[in-house]
Image 1 (tube, rainbow over the protein chains, first blue to last red):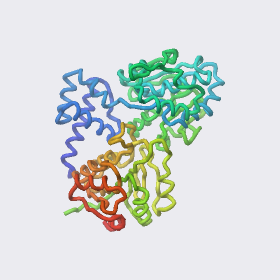
Image 2: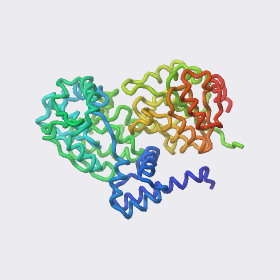
Image 3: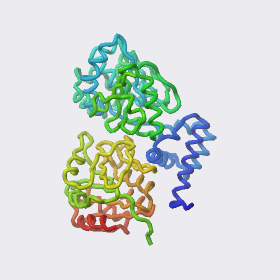
Length: 279
Length: 188
């Protein structure tokens, strides 16, 4: 056996050991994340946390619990936008909502909600469409800091012009400014938008099914997973959806390479909205 | 001496990319065996027309990359707007929504660094015209892993900053005209 890149190999070994340590000690399981992205993030963490090697970072992580949230910050924090990809929200509004209206009560799961941009987008859309009162939203993430941020509903003011423009392009029926108050360079979204929201720590890697959802929105979360883990998450979504329930993915995500592809039908193909087939 | 045949080509381009790529990509013959993975800086709010545009001009099959897509030879993959495009070790493509690098998403550095990891010595990386410094660091990662660096001659580039930065970072890079790059890719 020859190792074509001996120097690279050591780093790869160190990364595997670090991820193993993170799992064994803290039960955060990144072992099946797509390697290229996690490597980039780990390199940033190593640099900015001031370690010469991943082995040194691993030692610190094992012996100093304070290192955990700092490392998780690098591995999980995901900056999104409200109404990112306006056509997705337009398709939810125009094509999915008419189906949802036929149910007396609704459950919506935002899986990997990060800082809450997508949650507030959907909460506003559901209010505009008169569905909010019958809907229970579940917003889940593995990162407690992200959940806290989502629950606070506070965003930087300089991001609001983009959010506003996205909302308008998504076919928004109201003005985004109806929903927040601005002060000190930040905006705070109306807490009534969180009235029907359950925030919960949930891992698509290790946790179980969430029952009977009518809509699951999980966008740009699974791109960080490898194929096996994507299959696990999609299996979880399939089993968590009510019959004929909807699954929304990111603009460049696809079920094409998954073994669960057959369980879903294209609903709005160009916006990556799928519908669970009848068994 | 090199003993490894190249297995893949990565290309990064920014301002003036369309014209430059129009010299290189349509010149590649139908039996071209390597995959060609391309990052062009495009505005994030648009549906990209790059793949459609070049599909009409090229003899190779041309696609906008999807997440976890297996890489096949003789295919041109464009990074979708607003995502980074990376090469996984198992030789498939993956996307990321990580923050922009040097204000760019997709970022040439991100593609090149991951491709250098995955392909090592079997990679050819090409920097074309552009008005920023994206790609220079990635090109160094490519040569660091034993791959081949090619840079468009700044003298006839539409925008010179990007090729110049790449040459500064990788003084050993092969500097060529667009026509010579197209030729080189077929002969190497």
